[in-house]
Length: 179
Image (cartoon, rainbow, N blue to C red; front, top):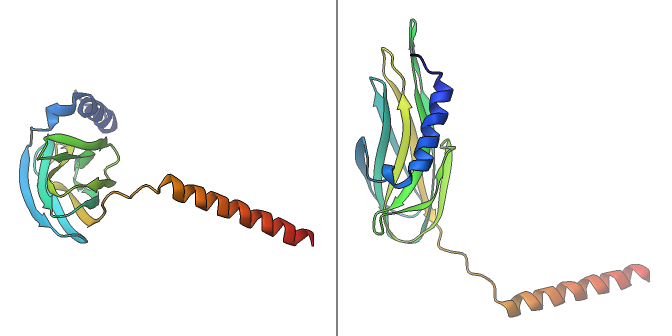
């Protein structure tokens, strides 16, 4: 039975979304990207020669509070009547210290971002499927870290002073226009 690739992708994405923790420990391939400094970009990729669902796990660590962002791109190969492609369906991030997911699963993996990560070890999980065919198809991505601790909230007193200053400036500007 032949299933439309987009329909199969939607079914797989729904399954991954509702299965939650089931995918946290199931990696079809695993590799380490090492310790990443702040403001660092590293590539990652995988190639497939037969059709299969995949859940690739890329482990890395950050030494200080960071923001992690990245991209994925897919590469197809056509050989006569046997098209071959990879469809990356989602990207998720797991904190290995607490074994919990960081944020929500990103179902638009062409560009992803996870903010306010404390120092520690993480697992980036790239999930999707490769179609049947005769040649190799692949995906590639980049992972970028940047300094990014939590942004402190302004104090209520500072907000009050700012509001009163803005009100005073607006009042004075109004009086100046009337003159």
